[in-house]
Image (cartoon, rainbow, N blue to C red; front, side, top):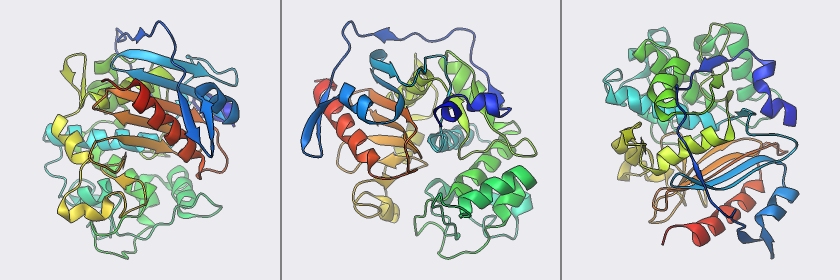
Length: 356
C-alpha cells in the first residue's frame, strides 16, 4: 500500500499536469518545530504521532516558510503522493476559475447546459451549485465496501467512460440543494462541466491556471477514464511540497507571489454558509465538520477548512495565520477515528505556532 500510494504514477499512465519553468522557493525555519498535543488522555509530540500512525509524509508551513517536513517508509521529496479525494477541492477551484473567466456563466446553470449528453437525466437537471455542495439529491451510497456505488462508478469509468459511468445514477431522492450526501459522482460531473466549458482537458486547465503559474517544483499527474477524461474525484499525484504550495495559496485567499490564482470571492463563497445552506454547517451536517464547495469547513467564528481523502490524506488550512499542515498516509480502514488525532495535532500547531 505504501508503494501504491507513492508510486501510483508508475502503475497507471497519468496525464501530465505541467509545472512552470521556475519553481517558487520556500524558506525553511532554522529550527524544526516539535509541537506537543493532547489526545486520548495523553500528551504526545509530533514524532510520537509519526511513530504511531501510518503517515508517509507530513509538512507544516507558515506563510512561505517550512516549519516541519518529514517522510516515512523510505519515501522522499521526489515521490508524488496519491491524493484520493483531496483532488475534489482542486476540481472545485477549477470551477471557480472557469466562472471568473466566463466559460461557466453561473453556478446556478444546469449541468446539461455544458454536458448535453446528460439532458433529460436527473444529473442533467441538477445545478452546478448543488454539485459543489454535494447536494445533488441523487441516490448514491459511498461506503468503500465491495460493490458500493463508488466501486460501480470507478468500474464504469474504466469500461465505459465518464458520461456512461455517471448515467447509471439517475434516481432523485431529494430536491437538489436541500440534502447533503457525499458523492464522488457529483465531483465527476463537475469535472465534465469544466472540461466542456473551457474546451481543454482538466490537466491542461489546471497547469495553465494554477500549477505553472504558481511555480510548482514538479509535474503533477492525473488519471483518466477510458476516453481520456480526468477522474475528477480522485487519482491525482503531486509531491508533498507542491501540495503545501497549493494549500498555502488557499491560506493566502487565493493569491501566490503577487498573483491572484483563484478568485478571492470564490474562496469566500466556497468556505461560508448562507441561510439557504445552513444544512451544510458544522453541527447540522456533522457534530464537527461543515461542507462548502468541495471542501470541509471547521465550525466556529474563525475560518479554517480542510481537504480530505480516504486512507489518511489530509490538508488543514488556517487563513488568519497563513498556516497549513499536509499529510499523506496509508491508513486502514479507509475512514474512521484516525482523523481525530490529526485534528488534535493540527489544533496544537495552530495554538502554538500561529501568528500572534
